[in-house]
Every structure is written in C-alpha cells, then in structure tokens.
Image (spheres, rainbow, N blue to C red):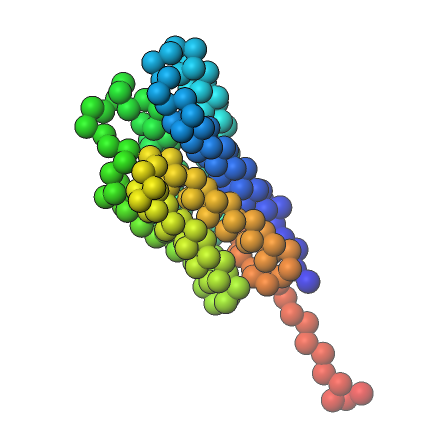
Length: 212
C-alpha cells in the first residue's frame, strides 16, 4: 500500500469545489434568464442576480486557481496539462463575466452562437484529455476521462434548446467535478498512482530463501 500525497488530494478537492461553484453560477444564470429575463431592466432583480452570480463565480475561481497552484507545486512534469488547465480556468472566468455583463463589455458577443458553444465544448474536452498524462497506462482513468468528455460535449446541445453559453459552462463543471471526484476515488483504491515532487523513492526489498 502506498501513501497518497496529501497535497495531491488537495488539488482535486479544490477542483471539485471550484466546479461546484461554476455549476451553481450556471443554475443562477438559468433561473435568471428563464424566469426573470423579461424583467432584466428592473435594477433590483438584475443587481440581486448579478451579485449572487459574481460571488459564486469569485469563490469558484479562487478554488480553481488554488487547484492550479497546487498542481504546479505537487505534480511532476505534465506541462501541457498544467498550461491548458490554466487557460481553461481563465476562459471560464471570461465567459462567466460576459454571460451577465455582455451589454457592458462587447457589443457583438453572441451567447447563443453555435460556433461559440462548439469551440467551448471542444476546447474543454481537449483540456480534459490532457489529464490522461496523470497515469496514461490505467484503463480506469481512461474510462473516467471518456465519460467526463462525453458530459462536456453535451454542452453543444444548449444551442438546439436555445440556451445561452451558461449551459456549456454547466456541463463542463459537471464533467470536471466528476473527473476530479473519480480520480480521488481511484487514488484511494490504489488503482492509479501519480508521481509528485518530494515523494521518497520506493525501495522494494527482495528476499531469497535459496540458502534456507
């Protein structure tokens, strides 16, 4: 039995909580646009929902940034995974800001655009695939990644249902939360192992009974 690096568990825990916050952000957007969108000009409604959404978004961003920092400080190599995960975090932050402040930031931004939903889903799926580098020889991890990618790609269905990009953010949050939770499970079950900075080399002791 090998000991799991506590910093490694912290990476995935922060990731899970960050994506839960992103999921809650998407639900707030869903409620706002589906039930109160036609009343969006009322300051009290707009301010209330924006405040809730941005507080949750901010907390989620802090958790995700902590996950990224712990990944960088804990996991050896995996440069591509770390770079794309950081870009993913910044991309989600930008899209969430635009989702509630479109009229203040970019006039031509179209939250119902299919190319936007497609590009967002594909980029998120690719980012998810980079986590295969954690332990590429483990079939269990491959299955988790494939399921997570499948969840993320359903974000493109938001276009067919006339949902804004928050639907894609929601499916991404579910996909990443599922992936991080399952990786923690696989680590506890010793079904995968990730090499970290500071780990002591594991020395196997061999014993021969030839002279017994």
